[in-house]
Each structure stands twice: as structure tokens, then as C-alpha cells.
Length: 277
DNA sequence: ACGTTGACCTGTGTGC
DNA sequence: TGCACACAGGTCAACG
Image (cartoon, rainbow, N blue to C red):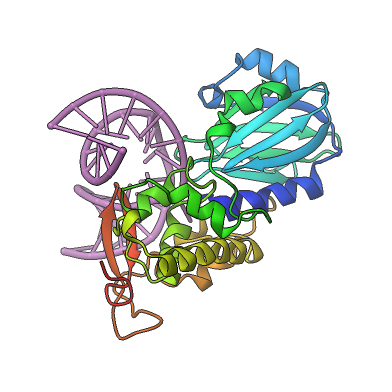
């Protein structure tokens, strides 16, 4: 599910609803999603803490708590973080329930079971998550074309797998990479070192554009709308997708038909006429 | 260095 | 309607 726009939307929801709240208790229903520390240490360490700030780094949510602790959440493919009234029945895919001092709950759900959390000392987060090895955040004001260009230097592989690599750029995933490559009219299997200056500039603009549009539209709830924001609402960006999961449908810009291929093990959607090798 | 594959997990969308 | 069967917004490790 969540790529940069979805995680950012959830982060903003947390800033609105949860920052300033105190955690009164927690129940860990699926202990194996917790990387560290031991479950009993996690539960006792977060109880009584106040949520002071919520950051995002690539697709990680960083929930900074009082006392120098940071609760790290990665939603992986299909995780949901929901702000709910406590009376709702606990679905079997609920992995963690965190109780807040206003009587509300945060619930982490994931049908696939891939979501992961951990609790770290705040001053060790950067090192523990290897954040210094991550690429720049494409929606930062200082993400210039020159910076983008420098990330592509001396790279030889196909452009789509490169853009999915969080060490190159932070936050892109399968949806927004396909959409950005379509917008830039670049075939996903093009070799990066074959892209000329104009193509690189188009790709830079497209990456920033699709991510910003995704945030404006509060994320993409594709296929049954598995992605939800903090309040359980679907995003709106699925209505704006040009190629993603649109195989067999007409290209928005030519007489061609959107095709589906597999690249790097991921489903990939593109227009074979607009995006040629 | 690059590209592919499988593992992680389990529900659900899709097509027959 | 029922049933089998890919398939999923991500990451990581192992292999050729």
C-alpha cells in the first residue's frame, strides 16, 4: 500500500489527532511484528509517554515519544494505522492497539502480516534505520534537478528498478514510479545511462509532480481501496492514475492500449507507444 | 554490477 | 454461485 504520499497523509493525520496525546496502554496482539525490544519492554516503555512529534523518513513513520523514545512503524504493502473509537470489535488482522488519554485508540492492522514496528532510542534512529544511506526526499524544497541528476550518475540499470531503490530516492513505490515514467514518456526498462538531458529533466519533474499530486489527493486506494488514511477514509488519487493497473485500457494520450509487464518482479504498467525503448 | 527469484504472510479480486 | 489461483502499495537475501 503505502508509498510516500500515503505515509505522508497518515503522518499528517497523526500530527492532527495524536501529537500531544499521552499513551495510556497498549495491547500487542501479533508480537512477531515487533522487531525490538521484547514485547513486555515495548509495552512498558510506551505506556505513559506523550507523543511529541511525528516525522516520516522514506516510508517509515517515526513517532517521537517523551523520554527520548521513538516508535518506528513500517506499513509495508497493506498495513493500516487507524484512529478509532474503542468499542469497535477487534478484527483478527489487528496487530497492535494503542490506547490514548482521550479514550481513542490507534490500531495497526495488516492482513498480510508484513507490517513491522520497533521502539528505539530517538538518538539511535538514524543509525538503526540507516537513514544516511537513503536517497533524498523528492518533495523537499532542496530536491533540485542537479541533486536528482547526481543520484543517477554512474548507474547502469533499468530506470524503474532504480527509482524503486530507496537508496537512490526515498519514498517512491510501484504506483508512483509507473505514473512518473508515463508522465515523462520513458519506458520503464530504459537504461538510466541512456537517458538524455531532456529525458532526465522530464523524469525529475514527473517524479515531483506525481508525488505532490498523490499527497494533494490524500493517497491512492487502488483495487478495493485497501489503503486508508488515519480516519479510515479512502484516498482520491486512484481516479487520477494514468496507467497503473489499467492494462487493456486506452492510453490517455494516444491510440495505444496500456500494457502490463513484469520488471524486477513487480507488475509494471506503461503505454508501449508513448514510452518506447 | 545487474537482474531475477523467492521468502515473508494471508485475504481477496478475478476468471472460469 | 463456487472454486482455484494469481496477486498485493515493500524489503531483503541469495543466486547466476
